Image (cartoon, rainbow, N blue to C red; front, top):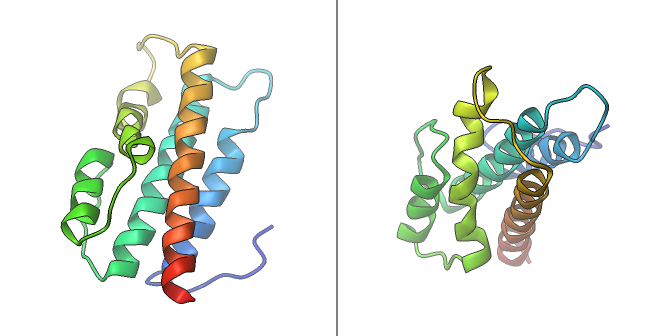
Length: 133
């Protein structure tokens, strides 16, 4: 359970949502598609990036393209580590893999998606923490 909620224009609320999505992404259960868990990993990364954009005062489009969102972050002067740039690989989980008829996600792809989402969330948390100190 989330300990404290914030207004929707507060980057801390976006990080709360990112953490919630990451927890869901890491919850392996029988009969749950890895594609659905990867969608939650993508959502965690997306919301963490949008938290950074809100923190920077940058308006952003409501899109799922993480590469484009990271371009906006970089355009506002934030350095993006290579490990975070890899988040662009997660964008496909927001669109194609959510529906029947796509190639199933492998366990290795799932683990990589979670790892990338964790890295993006840590990066976003460090930005907000460092600029609030």
